[in-house]
Length: 356
Image 1 (cartoon, one colour):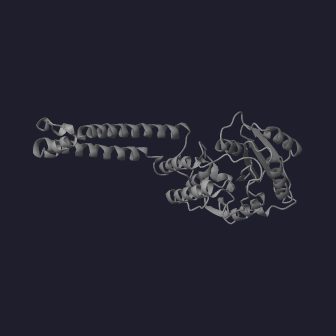
Image 2 (cartoon, one colour):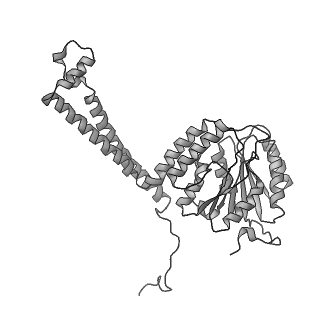
Image 3 (cartoon, one colour):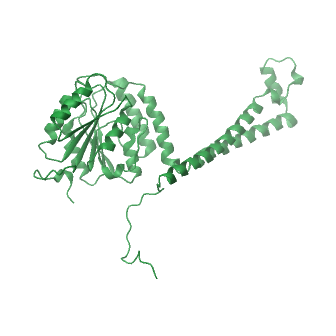
C-alpha cells in the first residue's frame, strides 16, 4: 500500500480525490492568515501531494473574513474557506473543518503561525511508520512561563496520568490523524485537545513528534490562565466517559451506596447517644454554651441532619444512575451504534450459506 509520504510527484490529481486535509480554525487573525497560506503553499505545493487547506473563520470581526475570501479566490484549487455565523470556539470550528475534510490524513493546526508548516512532512513520515495518530510536542514552547507553560505542564501530566496515554503536550493543535480513527468522533465544549484519547479508544496507535513552536508575531492570544480550570473540568468528564460511559449506574450507584452506608452509621450513632451513652451529646451542648444541660439530647448534634442528607443523597444518586442508563441506551439504540469496535471477521466461503 502506498503511503502518503511516498506519493509520486507525477500522481494525477483527480477531482475530489485528496490525500491530505490541513484544518485551520481562525479567529481574528487578519495579519496571520496570508503569511500562513504562503508558508503552507511553499511546503506542500512542491511535494505534489493532493491536498486541501480548510480555513474555518470562527466569527472574526477584524477583517479575517475578507482576507480568507481573497486567499480562496487566488488559490481555488487548494483552499476551501468556511465561515461560521458567530464565534463558537476553537473546538466547534475544528469540528466544522473535520466535517468538511475529504483527505485520508487530517492535520489540524493553529492559525496564529506559532505552529510551523515545515513540520507537516515530519508528522506524515512518522505516521507512515505504522501509527494512526502523531501528536505534536512543543518541547521548546515560546509562551509566557507563568501564565501558559507551567499550567500547561501540570495539566498535561494530569491528563497523561488519568487517561493512560503518555503524551507530553495535549494542547498542541498540530497533529496528524488517519481519517478512519476519527470516524464517529464528535467534539463538544473544548474537547479538541483530547482527540488523541478519543482516537485511542477507537484502537488507534498513538505516538508524538517534537515540533517547532514559534513566538506569536501578530495578533493577540485568545487564551489565558483561566483556561487551565476548564482543562481540569474537561479532564473529569474525560475520566468519566472513559470508565463509565457504558455503565453510569456503577458510578452513581456506588456513590449512592456509600451515602446510604454513611446515613446508617449516623443513625446508629444517634441511637447509641440516645439510649446507651448520652454524655457526648451533653458535651456537645456545653460547646453550644447552653445552660439547660439536662434537657439536651442527641438531637443537639448534627447527626440527624447528616443522616437525612446522606439518605437523600444516596436515593437521588441511584435514581440518577438509572436515568443515565436509560439515556445511554437511547443514545446507542437511536443511532444504531454498537458498544464494541469490530476490527475484522475471518470466515470460510460457506459461512453465509443457509441449509434449505
